[in-house]
Length: 352
Ligand SMILES: [Zn+2]
Image 1 (cartoon, rainbow, N blue to C red):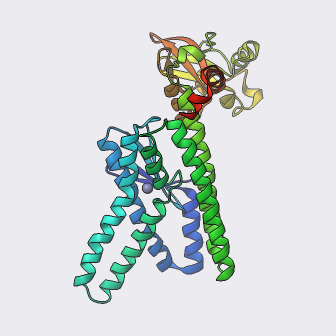
Image 2: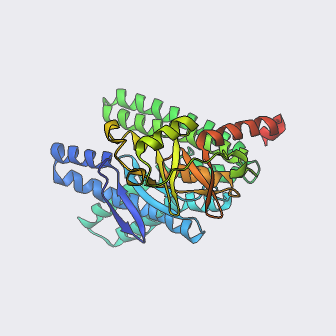
């Protein structure tokens, strides 16, 4: 696992991504402490920007799991899969609005300040201007793209609005990169090229994954775990050995077995390959099994998908009255949703 230190503010975990640490170390080696301190100062405003999003999210009943700081900025991880468009609008706008509020207050302070304080205040204004304006670019996953999409959702469906936002995002990404090409070669500044390449790539890939999620959400309306689950649940006694468990998995073509159902602990192929094959006959399944989230039959299918994503697993046990009754896999969900789309789609429905 990569090393990512974290701390808490307002009960929200703030995590420094390892790539940011590497960047800070490189800058420390190359340009010294002062350069690192000024980047940390910049990131203080990035954190406050993300906390503004989080504050509005929590006020509107949307849970925030953590804020991760990357070299190109911060990202708040939201717990909900579906956020109502009016909430997303306020939530997305909160970050840039914070930066513009800082600019307004600091501008007033510059009227009273003298050197060197006023230079320092102008630096704060510059930082917040860059953060505010950059984040308002109309490209998903940036705030501006989300504001634009939630505003479009007043007229069209979430899927249609996302499709439009993704097209716009790609245009912005290409424009940003082309502009940086011109600047880079006119002013012989290759740093900006690398930077904008990273940002354009984040926009390009980020908007693509937003689209996948929007398609999934759209096709998952009214679909529950019971519609996609597999009713043959495989479980082993906790005293079974790994060899017995693996033979059962092989015989039933199941990539996971449940070792205990309250609390739910599972043994999957991923856990098995961590143990030397020679020790499978002597190791008990209970020693290797790991706690796992589970879902209920009557749960919306997107909730199950979300649990898989946040636990980074591809299959979940399904319980009914605390008893194991089956499993559901990411592939089962995607297969059903694709079929569902094929069945419900008419050109009008895709359009709106
Ligand atoms: Zn933001």
